[in-house]
Length: 593
Ligand code: ZN
Ligand code: ZN
Image (tube, rainbow, N blue to C red; front, top):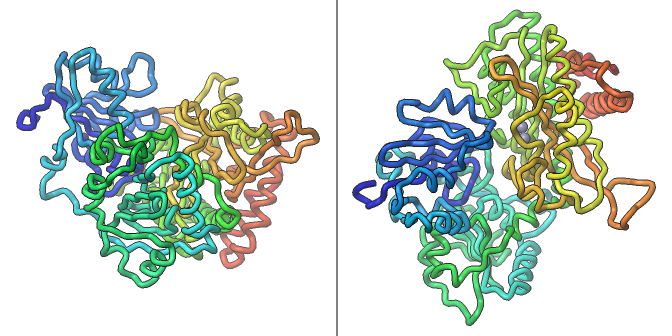
């Protein structure tokens, strides 16, 4: 920092594309701090180091950070500053704050500049990332994996049709063009998939769409296959080398008054390359992300289909696990469990890989919300404790994400009560009917109301969008109390998860998660004339029967449980005829209550 003339260096979690999951070469925050969770922000000053993360990671971060050097800042707790507030409150006036401008959005940078101005502190974009310099030769090289075409039979829309919508949008906005840096948006727009980032079928790239043309900036070695070459040609896409992107931006000559459209996630480096704020128009939201959120009929069908295969694999696994633990009295650790589940998934048609690392957790580990078991340090699965498994996969026809919580022996009355409160919230979201225009922000309390009655709560969102053979977490919508969830009404064709939970540190974790699709609801009236919406669940896997406290459920909630289990039995049986153990378990676990 001294050599580069700064007093502070900022280390966000994201890569240059603001990705949530990142390639090994971009895991700078994990390298410098030791904290490996997916969300966090590190600040290193001349005398201190602070790591900011949210409720999902408090426990994990406190275990992984070396408190000799690092202070954990628990985001969301009263009195704990955000990383921006920390810079304002803790730094001496006139501080120079260094950062890599490809890793911070222009919006965040400008906002921070304003907050720092009264103190005389300034932001200093650095050419070189100081963490990379320190990491040196040990830093992994960027991936070089080939990309492949995602056919229209799965996407339901050709690249030409998607590009036409973007060209029309650019014309409507009277702009010069649109810059896209989010990897899932580029994969979606060009009907291409890759494997540069574990669990996310995306590839490193940027795109610039002008009124008439479409440029894809990508390592050209990744697109040498004939099928990809002819796909790009048919779609009138011009491919250019990835590392010429910023140089190309610097070369753009704008017509009088025309600007480049960017969104609130576009990096400051992009804005600097096109000649500064005067040449860009920051759209409050991403047009391509909004288009991507509304799935086509083919994508929705793919989601239904892949969830059946995924449910069958999960049933096989839980049946296998219960038999191992109770009948064979086997000693299995959490990683053994996760690996066996992956094998059952890998045997399914159209399987590509996991959609995120499997959370296989016994007892107290279930309370670590994004727990990742590792050989050596993980626990043996104890049938006397609650077992929570949150997992999912990528299939050519869709992406899955499911959480189930089971107890293989006898749960306590308290565990049953907590589980049932979570289940009631899950059912309330699944059954919700609401007028068009309603956001997931407004639906969120439905998932918490029963826990609240018992003075309980959970510190994560209730649901997130899910990609169609794309990232397992996608926006712009979701169900939760993050303010931006109130910016996007739920709409027909969206996917979202329904995943309330409850966690007690040191004891257990409970979560019940299905993927649900937004659809039109049939209502006897139509007040306001705007139409009403509801959900269709596509995840099929029994919900732990012995954890349900029947006396707590209303007659309609009991009916929901029985109907859901009947549906699981009917839809999964044809896929499980070859596995007697799984079939028997499925029948047992779908017995009406
Ligand atoms: Zn999940
Ligand atoms: Zn989820």
